[in-house]
Image (tube, rainbow, N blue to C red):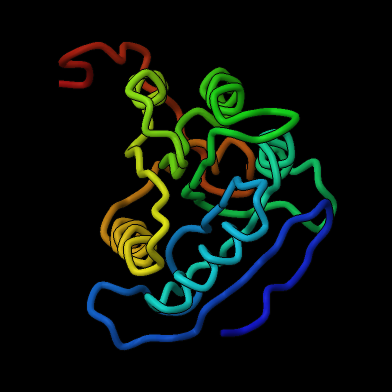
Length: 192
């Protein structure tokens, strides 16, 4: 496994160059992964599992929700993330927990379209329900089994390789891209 590269503000960037598995993306393609995780051991296990499944997308690590938002808003010198982002979010973190992060992310017009998967130890049905209330794409619980953890990371890798992620947030933050304007009437049947 290649060693992670430390960036500013406690972020880690790691790229795996393994290939050969069906459904994997070519190196450098696909979204960035933003792992929002305060536990260094869990972050390391995620990165090892990403390498094992041949994930070719960069994996960035933010140690809490505040640092993740700062990266997404380009407020971290050397720690910003360009392009589409798939967010993997722990719920129990200091400074800003996962629910506070989701609330702020969904309230920000430039960030609200990011796809978020929760990856946490909590199996509490109230937490599951609350997370889906913030339109998360999935709720995964951490396992004490490394192989079960690898399966979850493989699922995320395959998801990233098969879906088209929203681009509106990236366009808003990176105005060099093509201009995009919403239609005047965006209700049902608009434009027909």
